[in-house]
Length: 453
Image (cartoon, rainbow, N blue to C red; front, side, top):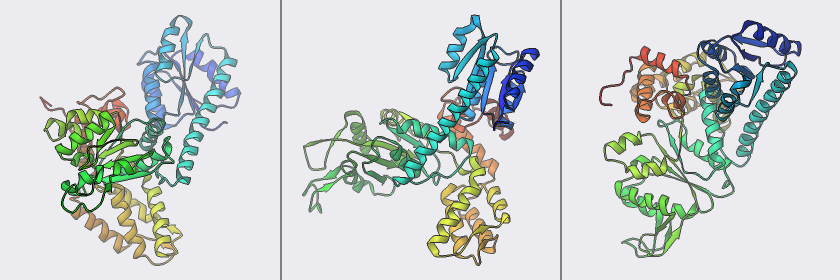
């Protein structure tokens, strides 16, 4: 059998059997489904290499199968089958992301060639992603650790944004690694050979932030004994990363808006206009749409920043990545402190994967560092230090149950998208979930839209 199976979605039993036999004769394993719900469940249970789906189904349709496949894995290739008189629908499916279509009656030889080509396309897509990541690492970009489906979907958005010079807004909770994503985005882009300049807008006092961003001339104010070049100039030919953009004062928001609109600014104390030559990536842990409604963030600036929004998922929504992250941090800190740790006891992972990590990856990193420093021997085991650390994190971090945190995050995303669940900008897409899965989770968590919201 040739790797992952082919998912065959066809409601007519005789045709489905004929196509299955043709595929199996060439060494392909096949999963069968007769309608959209069955196909979606099959994709959840077993990741296929290719999806072959009829467009006309008795329960749902091929477009629903196509949408779920692309939400599940952007690299998954979908071939649609349709009657000759419905070629227009097949073309629409290709516009929506299908690789190609087969007209009925289906020629088995053509079918086999199409499946081989679809599998080759998937391999090429995956290899290209890996090559880009390896190249980014060689150029000094930090590696994004994880294999979770939600994370992989975000990485595909990151790759697409990297091929443009568009302004990107990274949204996500504190500690999710937004700067790592920003550095990776820079490494993927055409400005990769230029500088990457980062500034945390929340970490610098407001009276100093303007000069940090735009610079000043000698004598511009008391204490300005020499000219200072600002971060926007230092980022020339490269990328400027504006972290915690939601903390900018309204006055500085006006100045930043001009930079985004006109591509120019002046140093403090100068009348000479400087043209900006840097890509802008911004990040925030706030809901900027709600900040706009409260009058705390300019709507026009939000529109300018929100050209290519990417939501970085919290760690609790990608718990399958915890072992990979733990392994990475153990190796990193073992090398840093000179500890001969070569393996991790299985007992370490269970409690780490049952904790909700309100501080996200940053919190996990801190916990593992303390565990490594206090460990003895070549195996990292569950210890009093780890137990105490998690208890301290729970207290200092105002620890909540996983369901509480999950509920709050889903509500926040729903509010950001005006409670839309489906569609390319809907909450299901942002969360990396199927719309029906999201609705089920909303019922379980008691999430309802309030009147007027």
